[in-house]
Image (cartoon, rainbow, N blue to C red; front, side, top):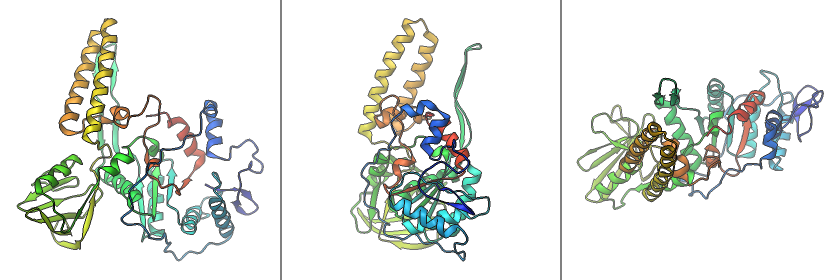
Length: 411
């Protein structure tokens, strides 16, 4: 985000060539087109913005808590950036040397506009640094972290010379997965949200309509049969584990059900039933078991962004089987019997797992079927979760924009 260069450092508004640099693109779109000319032929992409449910924790203001005050060129830059945002300018540029307070300037713009913000960083290290700084600036608000959750990732491969198939191998970082769930939940439940993300946020996650529709509320005094509650938790990909109570699991002790939500690190919920009525809802420390709060109601979000309603899953399975039948016929006609056998074995196993559990290893390979997209359409991403009035800040844009140009077809 930012401005054209001015005497003294920081900047000013509308988009025009930088002084002394007439050939340098000054907007994200122009930067992408300069790197990849074919992008100029593509229509401007607008993320799908479905209607979202009412926010249960809305109405909070974004407030900076800091001893710092804008100095030097910062007040001018902040005022012009805010004016541009309020005038619905699509692109602005903020220039400043290292240590000139660009992060503080971004925070002041977010506070002045009272609009949620997405800060895009080129890598996890810089994203973590920005996350820490924004947490200090907005201690009373929801500052979230959204980066790739893989500790390592080896894609599936086939070596034709030796007829060797190598399965995909990956390791998911549980802490980062929790933070991703916390970020998407905050965007759907709160107005005072700042999300710091790496460029990997342009990769697909679950559809926001399905993700939000599959949530359910539990209220004190509500009539809720225990078996139905357990079935609903399983449908949201929570697993029953009465011994090892960790994030994404639940356990049952008589008329008491304890749930460790996907977005919490050190808090869990306890539901005490009296017959088919929810008698009490309490929050407790899962390590010590000590109760920390009494609650009137909670909203349960899925343990997976790829949660899918049963009718949608059944429809997706039918389409997968139909495409599999066509592809197998092509392989058999070409005499590629080994490939046909391998494809059939893998797909039928995945279908069996999806039918039985609602998910399978590598379910992202079937995301087009699960979301009903056509070939070539972009997947649902974090941008679908953003409110319509959100601001997007691209940090280190000289690095980040080329990354986007190289990754935007990477579904």
